[in-house]
Length: 163
Image (cartoon, rainbow, N blue to C red; front, side, top):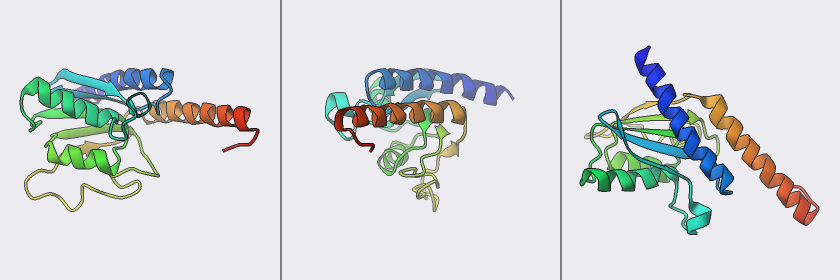
């Protein structure tokens, strides 16, 4: 029960990052990275502001976490993200050897933990992270739904037609 409570607390922090993305007009995904139970990096999507297709929240915390630890191997770390990682992020998570991944909402269009495809199967011979989905799933999904609803309304206002 203690682990579930801790996961919920950490996902709330990831949701705070996702809210920052929402307010900045970015797809609202937030992530935090813990090493031995302590937060070492946190970020939200910044693709629009950086004009960088790789500026996903997960990749940003991997970069910051590696700098904080002084090592590209992120052993004994846990990544919390509000959305199931995409294929690009899944690859980076595997290569950086993140030990555990916890996500909120599934991503039926791009999710790489089985919602769309599964980058984590078959198991890698040298590193397979523990993965758990569905932590604060509804809260994560609600923020995404609201963002895309707002985007559709903006588009309709500008163009006169729905997306």
